[in-house]
Image 1: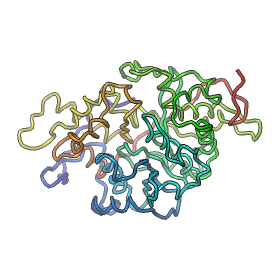
Image 2: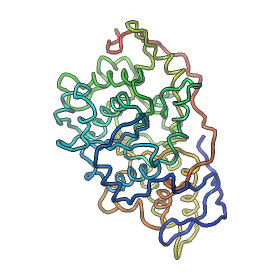
Image 3: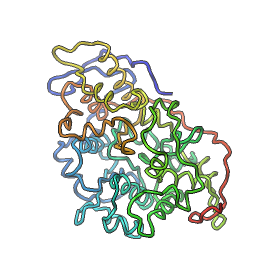
Image 4: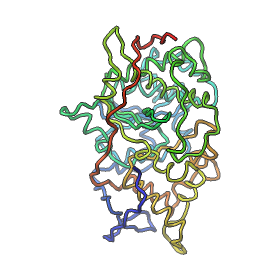
Amino acid sequence: MAPSAIAATVVTEPTILSSTVKVGVPLGLNLITPNKLDLRSDAEIAEWLQKPHPITSDKNVWAFWHSGYTNMPPWVQRNIINWVRRLGPEWTVHLLDNVPGSETNVARYVESSYFPDVFNNNIMDGPSVGPHSGDLVRLPLIWKYGGVWIDAGTLLFRSIEDICWQQIEDPTTPYEVAGFVIEMRPGVDCMLNGFVAAKRKNPFIKRWHDIYLALWEDGVTNAQGFHKHPLLRHLPLFCPPVDKLNCPNLNVMMETFSDYMAAFMCFERLRKLVDPNDGFNGPEYYSKHMLLFPALQETYYFQQQTNWSGTRQFELLTAKRTGEGVVKDENWQAAEIFVTNALSNTSTMKLSHGPPGALDSFLADLWDSKEHQEKDNIDGTFAAYLRYGSVHFEQNARDDPHEDGWPAEEVLICGVLEPKEL
C-alpha cells in the first residue's frame, strides 16, 4: 500500500540543493556519490541527447517525442536530462523522434515493416498523435535492442537495477519482463506500457507489438473504434474502479477511454491467449515470467494522494519549501509528506495529458503552459526539491511487493492475430 506517514528527516551534514538552499537527507535515503552520476552540464547533456549513440548492450533506456527534443516542453526536457545524469555511464539513454531527416529518427533504428503506413508517412491524426506514436515505437525497440522504455513525462526516483533489472538479469529468477499494473476493470489488473523492461528478442514483447500493429492496418489514421477491432472486440470495455483508485469519475465515455488505452487491451488479449500454432502460452508466461508491481505505489502514488487532481499537485509542488518567510503550515506539511514519500518509497512519477478530458486537470498540462513552464524547477520550491532528490538520492533497500497468484481466467485458444469467434 502507498505510504501515508511522513518520512522523518535525518539531521546530518547538509547537502547543497542549489546555490541558496541547504537540506538534510530524509530518512530512508542516501546521497549518491558523484562518481556514479553524469556530471556534464544540462546544456551538454541536451546536445548529446540529440545525437545517435551506439548500442553496446541491453542496458538502454528508450524514450520518444514524435516532434523531437526541441519541441518538448521544458519540464519534459528536464526529465530526460535528469535520467541521463542519475543513471550515469551504466545506461545509455536514447531519445528518438519521428522528425523527417532527424539524426534520432526512429527509422534509423527500426525497419519500416514494424510500423503501419500512417506512421511511416507521418499522417496520423486525432488528439493523441504523440502518445499513440509512442505506443507503436516502444515495443520494437525493446524487441530489437533490449532495455527499458520510460515515457518521457516520467520522473525517475530509483536506479533501474533496483527497480527490476537485477532480477531480469539474474539467471536464478524466472523473470523476463517487468512493469507496473493497475486495475482497468474491477478485479482485473493490466500492465501499463509507460515503463516496460525486457532483454532483446523477448517472445511476449514481439507478439504484443504484432497485435497492436494489426489495429493500424487498412488505412486507419487514428485510434477511434479500436475497441471494436476483431482482435479486441471480445474483451469488455475498460472501466477503472475509481473508488479503489481514489479517483473521481472519468469525464469520458468508456469506448473512448478503451480506444486510447488500446495497447493495454492488446496486452490483455495476449496474456489470456494460447496459440496452438506454435505453443505460446500467454497465461503461463504471464504468471511465471513477469515481474509486476502495483502502479498505485510505484508510479501513481502522487495521483492517488491528491485524488488525481493536477491542480492540487501543482499547488503542493509550487509551494516554497525553504527560504525567507516560509511558514510551515498545513499546506507545507502536506507538500513535505507528498514529496518525501515519493522520493523514499516510489520508483517513478508518471505525468500524462490524457485521455484528453478524462480528468478536470492534469499537472502535465499546467507545466506545459507558457505561464507555468518553469514552475517545476524554481529554486526553493518543493518541485525543485523533488527534482534534486530524483537525481541525488538513492533509496535504502526496500521490500517490493510484486503481484503474484493470478486468478484463473478464460483462456483464448487461437493464433495471435486470429480473431475470437463470437
